[in-house]
Image (cartoon, rainbow, N blue to C red; front, side, top):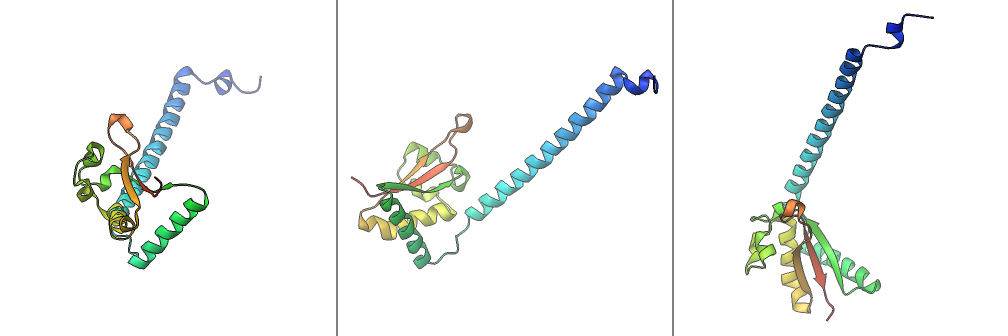
Length: 151
Protein backbone atom coordinates (compact mmCIF):
# COMPACT_ATOMS: atom_id res chain seq x y z
CA UNK A 1 0.00 0.00 0.00
CA UNK A 2 1.54 3.31 -1.04
CA UNK A 3 2.04 5.54 2.01
CA UNK A 4 0.76 4.88 5.49
CA UNK A 5 -2.84 4.79 6.63
CA UNK A 6 -2.23 8.09 8.42
CA UNK A 7 -1.56 9.69 5.02
CA UNK A 8 -4.77 8.26 3.60
CA UNK A 9 -7.12 8.72 6.53
CA UNK A 10 -6.31 11.59 8.88
CA UNK A 11 -7.38 11.38 12.50
CA UNK A 12 -10.80 12.62 13.53
CA UNK A 13 -9.06 15.31 15.58
CA UNK A 14 -7.21 16.56 12.47
CA UNK A 15 -10.47 16.59 10.46
CA UNK A 16 -12.26 18.55 13.21
CA UNK A 17 -9.38 21.05 13.24
CA UNK A 18 -9.57 21.49 9.45
CA UNK A 19 -13.36 21.85 9.59
CA UNK A 20 -13.05 24.48 12.33
CA UNK A 21 -10.54 26.43 10.24
CA UNK A 22 -12.90 26.32 7.23
CA UNK A 23 -15.79 27.52 9.39
CA UNK A 24 -13.64 30.33 10.77
CA UNK A 25 -12.71 31.37 7.22
CA UNK A 26 -16.39 31.37 6.22
CA UNK A 27 -17.33 33.40 9.29
CA UNK A 28 -14.54 35.87 8.60
CA UNK A 29 -15.63 36.25 4.98
CA UNK A 30 -19.27 36.72 6.04
CA UNK A 31 -18.23 39.38 8.57
CA UNK A 32 -16.22 41.25 5.91
CA UNK A 33 -19.15 41.12 3.47
CA UNK A 34 -21.61 42.23 6.15
CA UNK A 35 -19.35 45.13 7.15
CA UNK A 36 -18.98 46.18 3.51
CA UNK A 37 -22.75 46.00 2.97
CA UNK A 38 -23.36 48.03 6.13
CA UNK A 39 -20.84 50.67 5.02
CA UNK A 40 -22.45 50.80 1.59
CA UNK A 41 -25.92 51.19 3.12
CA UNK A 42 -24.66 53.93 5.44
CA UNK A 43 -23.09 55.79 2.50
CA UNK A 44 -26.32 55.50 0.50
CA UNK A 45 -28.44 56.80 3.37
CA UNK A 46 -25.97 59.64 3.87
CA UNK A 47 -26.20 60.55 0.18
CA UNK A 48 -30.02 60.33 0.13
CA UNK A 49 -30.32 62.49 3.24
CA UNK A 50 -28.76 65.41 1.35
CA UNK A 51 -30.17 67.46 -1.49
CA UNK A 52 -30.20 65.79 -4.90
CA UNK A 53 -28.41 68.76 -6.41
CA UNK A 54 -30.92 68.92 -9.27
CA UNK A 55 -32.36 72.25 -10.36
CA UNK A 56 -36.10 72.88 -10.16
CA UNK A 57 -36.27 72.55 -13.95
CA UNK A 58 -34.52 69.16 -13.84
CA UNK A 59 -36.87 67.93 -11.11
CA UNK A 60 -39.95 69.03 -13.05
CA UNK A 61 -38.64 67.38 -16.22
CA UNK A 62 -37.98 64.14 -14.33
CA UNK A 63 -41.48 64.19 -12.80
CA UNK A 64 -42.99 64.82 -16.24
CA UNK A 65 -41.08 61.90 -17.75
CA UNK A 66 -42.13 59.49 -14.99
CA UNK A 67 -45.79 60.57 -15.13
CA UNK A 68 -45.97 60.46 -18.95
CA UNK A 69 -44.46 56.96 -19.01
CA UNK A 70 -47.02 55.77 -16.46
CA UNK A 71 -49.88 57.32 -18.46
CA UNK A 72 -48.66 55.60 -21.66
CA UNK A 73 -48.79 52.32 -19.72
CA UNK A 74 -52.39 52.95 -18.67
CA UNK A 75 -51.63 53.68 -15.03
CA UNK A 76 -53.35 56.21 -12.79
CA UNK A 77 -50.59 56.20 -10.18
CA UNK A 78 -46.88 55.51 -10.01
CA UNK A 79 -44.46 54.75 -7.20
CA UNK A 80 -41.79 57.36 -7.71
CA UNK A 81 -39.47 56.59 -4.83
CA UNK A 82 -38.69 54.12 -2.06
CA UNK A 83 -36.47 55.01 0.86
CA UNK A 84 -35.43 53.73 4.29
CA UNK A 85 -37.33 55.06 7.29
CA UNK A 86 -34.07 56.47 8.63
CA UNK A 87 -34.56 59.40 6.23
CA UNK A 88 -37.40 60.57 8.49
CA UNK A 89 -36.48 62.33 11.70
CA UNK A 90 -38.82 59.97 13.60
CA UNK A 91 -38.03 56.77 11.62
CA UNK A 92 -41.42 56.96 9.87
CA UNK A 93 -43.60 56.97 13.00
CA UNK A 94 -45.68 60.00 11.97
CA UNK A 95 -46.23 58.58 8.47
CA UNK A 96 -47.25 55.24 9.96
CA UNK A 97 -49.67 56.96 12.37
CA UNK A 98 -50.91 59.34 9.62
CA UNK A 99 -50.29 62.28 11.92
CA UNK A 100 -50.83 65.84 10.78
CA UNK A 101 -47.49 67.42 9.93
CA UNK A 102 -45.83 64.09 9.01
CA UNK A 103 -44.19 65.87 6.06
CA UNK A 104 -42.09 67.87 8.52
CA UNK A 105 -40.23 64.66 9.44
CA UNK A 106 -38.87 64.21 5.89
CA UNK A 107 -35.25 64.93 5.00
CA UNK A 108 -33.15 64.91 1.86
CA UNK A 109 -34.60 63.59 -1.38
CA UNK A 110 -37.94 62.46 0.15
CA UNK A 111 -38.44 66.05 1.33
CA UNK A 112 -37.53 67.38 -2.16
CA UNK A 113 -40.16 65.10 -3.72
CA UNK A 114 -42.80 66.38 -1.30
CA UNK A 115 -41.86 69.99 -2.04
CA UNK A 116 -41.98 69.37 -5.79
CA UNK A 117 -45.46 67.90 -5.41
CA UNK A 118 -46.63 70.73 -3.13
CA UNK A 119 -45.30 73.47 -5.42
CA UNK A 120 -46.03 72.06 -8.90
CA UNK A 121 -48.12 68.89 -8.93
CA UNK A 122 -50.72 69.51 -6.21
CA UNK A 123 -51.99 72.70 -7.91
CA UNK A 124 -52.54 70.57 -11.04
CA UNK A 125 -54.67 67.99 -9.21
CA UNK A 126 -52.07 65.31 -8.45
CA UNK A 127 -52.09 63.49 -5.12
CA UNK A 128 -49.14 62.14 -3.14
CA UNK A 129 -48.89 59.30 -0.67
CA UNK A 130 -46.06 58.36 1.65
CA UNK A 131 -46.69 54.89 3.04
CA UNK A 132 -44.74 52.31 5.05
CA UNK A 133 -44.46 49.31 2.71
CA UNK A 134 -42.66 46.75 4.85
CA UNK A 135 -42.37 45.92 8.52
CA UNK A 136 -39.17 43.96 9.17
CA UNK A 137 -39.34 42.50 12.65
CA UNK A 138 -42.74 44.15 13.13
CA UNK A 139 -41.40 47.71 12.99
CA UNK A 140 -41.80 50.26 10.17
CA UNK A 141 -39.28 49.78 7.38
CA UNK A 142 -39.09 51.26 3.90
CA UNK A 143 -41.42 54.00 2.75
CA UNK A 144 -42.89 54.34 -0.73
CA UNK A 145 -43.82 57.62 -2.38
CA UNK A 146 -46.69 57.36 -4.86
CA UNK A 147 -48.04 60.08 -7.15
CA UNK A 148 -51.59 59.55 -8.39
CA UNK A 149 -54.00 61.34 -10.72
CA UNK A 150 -56.95 58.95 -11.14
CA UNK A 151 -60.35 59.29 -9.51
